[in-house]
Length: 420
Image 1 (cartoon, rainbow, N blue to C red):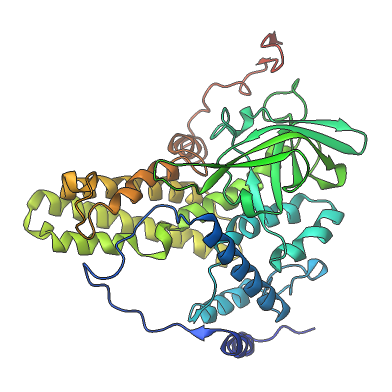
Image 2 (cartoon, rainbow, N blue to C red):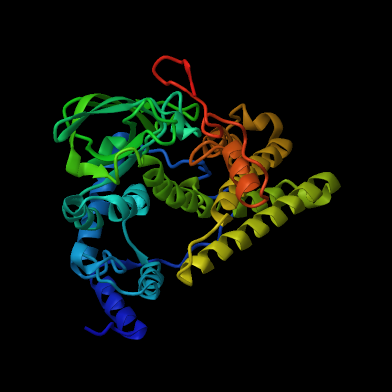
């Protein structure tokens, strides 16, 4: 069956959107001191508001999927339309002109978990989950980090022990976004403690409502609770819900991490507002152009943000051309969070005590939410130190840091003894 042309596809998309959504009103010009001054690294909502937003997002995704726009590029055998990426870009361009429910609750499931299931899942898992995920019936989360294994994912200790056709998972995960409203999770667990740490891991799809799964919110220093810690107590997972081969979980994790760093590097945060544009307006309001030191600091900030945008565009152009991005994603992640730190320093220099003491003045203390959230961004998706190691080894060709897997010897993870 022939693909519709881009023009035909856009016309179909426009007809669907005009029948089911309102066009966006003309964006009002930002005026300093008017409207909300809220700005933050992570969008933080109370649980009841979040549940309502998730329900609206699911309703919209189901409507979009049933109209043929839910998984435009996906394989037909799993519920997609198998159209080129250009058709997806065409639809996104049209939808951007309409006011539709925020789809942020699907970012991890569709951007990270679903591609991993497609690449590594069993036929049963792909048939069971992919269409439902893209239709919004199922939401997925990512269960990687642990209290003792964050950026060094291979050091995780959550274990999975085989019991016939099932696996029994016991352990703890942390910093899990959306765990409380997710239906399934992608989890990496240790399945062989006698292998080097990267080689004894296996990936699974776990039911987040299964007996033995306990989800607790994590309160951040911003006051919000955007993340969770998840405890697994002898949670049973069928072997047909395994991702990839036994003890090949590291390659499964890399599939997910590549997509995660792309999302973080190219994404923004800040609850949908342009934080950098607001910084510029604040600089004008406080007369920064008249101060040579602050003016120079602002110029450096503008330059570094512009360079980061060019790097992100380079990665997006590769993807559009059907290529896999290389080190651009690690660069984008590292530079993006470093620019957030620089922005915080600049704000501190301008606002001083107004940043830590709430005087009630518009556009001052509100910035504390952004600055308190920035350290989380420098850890999520791989810490700055991990990103620097990746770039040093894979781009500059520097030798790998000595580690447990860099020699023929490694410690037995059970006893701590040295093995030859």
